[in-house]
Length: 114
Image (cartoon, rainbow, N blue to C red):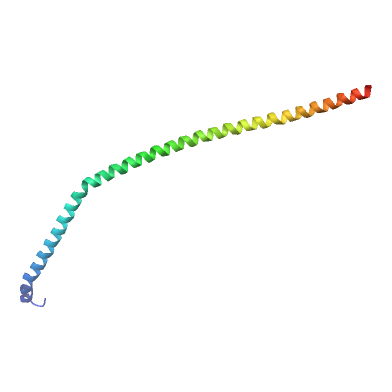
């Protein structure tokens, strides 16, 4: 505005524009607040549902972790038993071989006596 008079003439239009903009913003704010207030119960229910789901997930994770520990213990026990059985098998095979050789030796000795 170049002059004071131009500014004075423009003030009513500027005031009307600002008032209109404020009324529009106020309406938008009121609508948004009503919408949020309407959604509050649903939102609270959703939050409770999410918390419940998180607790269930934490419980399930703890169960899986516990089962994994039990499985690890079982695997270690089975492995230990397999090692023992393998050791016993090796000794049994050696014993059978020694008995076969002893049998062959006794049979050969009897053959020589005859």
